[in-house]
Amino acid sequence: YSGWTAADGLAKVPAVLAAEKPAIAVIMYGTNDVRKQIALVDYERNLKAIVDHCLKAGCIPIISTIPPQLGQDAAVQSF
Image (cartoon, rainbow, N blue to C red; front, top):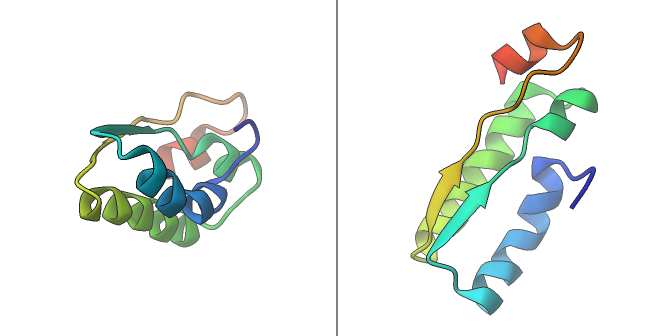
């Protein structure tokens, strides 16, 4: 959903995986984490947990890259 961070996604992913049983999941978090100045270590922990949940559910995670953001080049590159 618009405005969600990786932490928001992590809170919902177990229920979604259980209900939907997807074969693949396209994971597109990071843009809002950068905008909301979430610490990189927290973003990494949340993203890794999302990937782990997917793998445990037999779902292949596909992780997208964060698009460029005006004035946020360094932050986007670090993510």
